[in-house]
Image 1 (cartoon, rainbow, N blue to C red):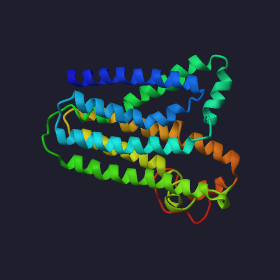
Image 2: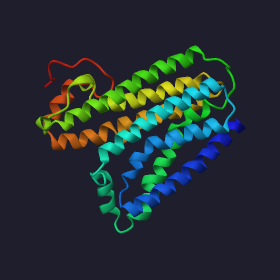
Image 3: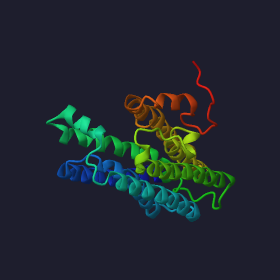
Image 4: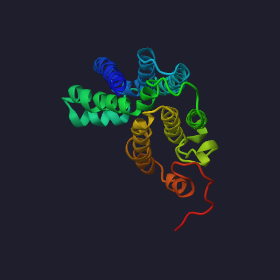
Length: 265
């Protein structure tokens, strides 16, 4: 247990330093959206820091660190390219207006501090899974985790790509994206992200104290479903596009499923 506590403590210090640096940069750039770009990269730093600090089973360590790196880098690059030239995200603009003239200090706690804490909790699977040296071979649970992660990565990356192509076509302006994976779930990227973290949890679960990482997938799933994901996004979509109500009536919210042919009255 002491080893896990030590790992979490050193990663807490790493995240704290990173968040303060990102906060200072956001003040200089007047753009709190930098936090969104750093989100995936932060998990990569935690994974590698844990990798070098622990002495667990090397194959499992490489697996957890590698999968986290692939996901985190792809996500950060995707958000960076999406945000280029667009200024601060409207979410942060509203917060800036609400807390003026003190947003600069409020953002340290509400934006960067809070997301730093969430980052530490969500990454528990990656941290705990690298601590133990047993079992010293990959188990059935590890392989299940890999398969679940691959499914999740496909949904998130393919969903993001399909949406990017859809939005890039001027002919689709004002229309609802309901093609490809978006025909089976209204949020394939959110479903994919949650699924990946459940996969990483299964890999961690192969170790003796892996069950302690359950907060990892539960937290990210709750956030995506009830806080910053589905609920928040769909509220805005319904206000901007009346056709989105029909999309809600025919397409699964989160778990992929076949489209309904009729909307219930």
